[in-house]
Image (cartoon, rainbow, N blue to C red; front, top):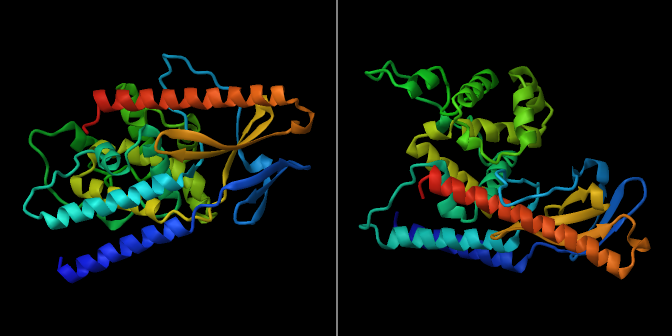
Length: 337
């Protein structure tokens, strides 16, 4: 790469970082519970939104203990600091690679190590950023680089991975029949580590959707459901990915985070047991609460409001601790760093 092209690259990255700093993601200035299942949200940039509560993610009361094994996923916004962190990290990485081209670089050998090395954070970041890349179409499992080359070569002796993947058109099981077959085989062999912590509703959707229904979801433009199914497909094929495919996914996911739109609506979750609407954000440390409004807020005393708020805070803290435990277990027992 020429010096001129490098200067242009650095200029683009620095300008984009400066622009993001100038156009900060709007925060919630006011949120109130209206009639007919509506939430009225006013942002710091004076834009107003009416959100139908029935269309938002709901959750009942959750409890976590020290033995919690699962991770919890919420459809939340990515924090502005986190996006800036990725921008600066990418810029530093480009500078390091181009100013010292003699020094060899270590190429990631697993999907986890590739994304963790770029994005940082724990497993919850890994899941959220993959889902966002898939849902925004920055990452498509049918991209040409994900297609397996046609060959008549066969390993001798025949390997188990070859037997499992020889009929796959892509490096991941792209057909639902193939993907569900791989899932059932892995479950029978007690080898679902790649899916550890994936939301149960993702798995339920994946298992209940045949290829015909998948194609129907695509025709209807149901990006969220497609992304959840594709996440399961991708992770089922994660251990069969080549280094080129891993680096391709790493680049696409990182790019999707860098291009994250500052105009995204706030992500709101309804905690039914507390009659609360909670705007959530994902930052480098985990989930955090941006804003809380209770359905019966006008009837609550200051003490009752504070008590409910603290219970929700404690629950989010427990969720973050459970996610961190999954991350540590995964890092130490399965994936390379």
